[in-house]
Each structure stands twice: as structure tokens, then as C-alpha cells.
Length: 233
Image (cartoon, rainbow, N blue to C red; front, side, top):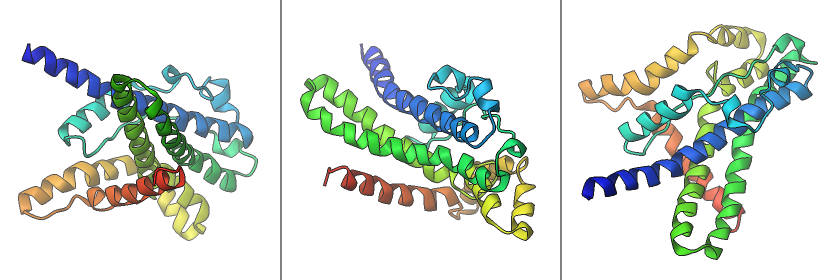
């Protein structure tokens, strides 16, 4: 009986994370594709990626399994995952350097917008039955957190993250070109910073969890600001 209850509680809580993650990643990727399409490159549009159908964007491992494992391993303090990359032919954009910035920024901006929408929807909880109210409220709380996390994390100025592409587009060539060359190796650098540095620090007795120093504090500020501008304070 206890085991059955634990399974139910895990599923109950799990879905309040999975649903917001799927929505957040779907709109994030669709926003990249839409921005590219509006800026002259229809590659993503032709491949069906300017879509709100999550199955067009979800990667089984990166979107569902990996975030779930990271959440469990960090006891709910951290989430990490990815979707299928949206194909963008930057040379086909109307103004490649400028438009690359808009295409990259579209994903994080969509996450900020979704966080605000979720906070507005939180006002509806008082109209729902008690059992549904709690489940809905958890979905909304997690949706705000996940969208703010995706916006902040993706704006780290390291390719292939969106912030890296924004930085490449805004920086002068003498700085932007070397940064752009990290596009393929950048993900391994990030993995090292996120996972390996804290492990090494743990062995040395030094806190090297750089991401945990910076990201949660920024998210907390944005979380409070989001609630404030949507009338929760």
C-alpha cells in the first residue's frame, strides 16, 4: 500500500514537471523557427518545426529522460535538457549578422513571455476545486520556474547556447569570431562546468558549482518580478 502511494505521489509530482517542460521547450524551439522564417530562412518552416506540436520538437532522451534524471539527482534543485535543434541556414537570413541575434534571442524571449502568461493563469486557481487547484498550482509554479530557467541558462554567452549566438552577433569580429569557433566544442565545455567541476570541487573540498552560484539567484529575482508584474504582490 505504501509503495503504491509512493508511485502515485511520484507520478503526480512528475507530471507537474513534465507538462511544463514539454510546453516550455516546444514554444522555445518553435519561436526560433518562426523568427528565422520571418527573417528570410524558411528551412525550419519547410521541415515542420514552426509548430506547436510537441512531437516535432521533443527528443526522447534530451527532453524527457535527461531532465527527469537530473531533477531526481539534484533533488529538484536543477533541471537540464534539450530538444531537437531547429535547423537554421544563417546565410539565408536577410541580414545574417543582425538576424542571427533575433533568431537566437527568440527562444529565451518566448520563455520569458510564457513565464508571465503562467503567472497570470495562476489567478485562476481560486476558481478550481480543491484537489485540482493544488495540481494546477504546482504546474503553474513549475512552469514559471522552468521557463525562467530556460531563459537565463540559454542566455549564457557560450555557443551553442542562444546567448553565445547573440554574443557572436553583437560583438566585434575580433571577439565574436573566436567565440563562434566554440560552436561544436562549447557543449562539452558546458557539461564540464555543470557536472565535472562540482565533482572535482567536492573531492577538493571547494565549492566549484559555478552554475549554482549564479543561475538560481537570477531566477529568484525574475520569479519575484514576474509575480509582482502579474499582480501577485
